Length: 188
Image 1: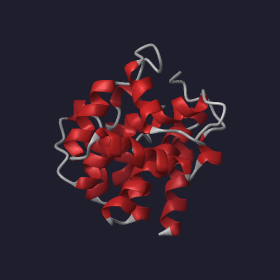
Image 2: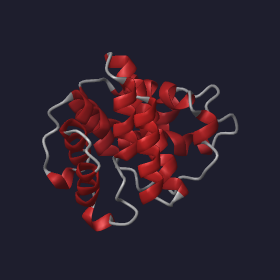
Image 3: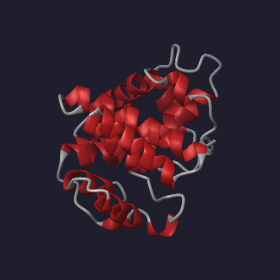
Image 4: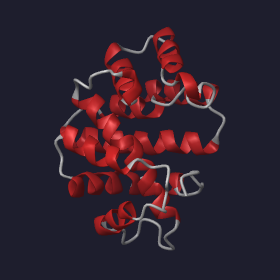
């Protein structure tokens, strides 16, 4: 699977130039890997789904994820990955029938939100608690672009309590702290 991740990274860099979008993809990858461990699923495969979910967003924001789906099909990615990518955007009206699809939907917004929270903390991930993230979620002025309702609804759809959901994301992202906190994710 390592070779498959290398292929996915190469594809990501072929279609995305924005440092913040690449870091977002890496954050979602980390969260997907964390959830794959949590659910006993294929960590590498779920990570690749996270890496590639916004492949087309920079070049085709108005046609996202349709253009990305075309790229993924051309590259021979399986239907389960393609369906998960289609399902992470409400406008596609794609039912999220698999745990992987529901997880991608649930981690997409929250992963970037947690990173935004970490970037304003002097100790970054060290000592970060769920209650700090929940407090920031209530602050509508912080990371205004983040859809708080989607975060709550997606956790419910995934069948996981929001406190546990946030903790899994914190744990997953903190494993990749050096890679993820060096940038400013245009959410702040």
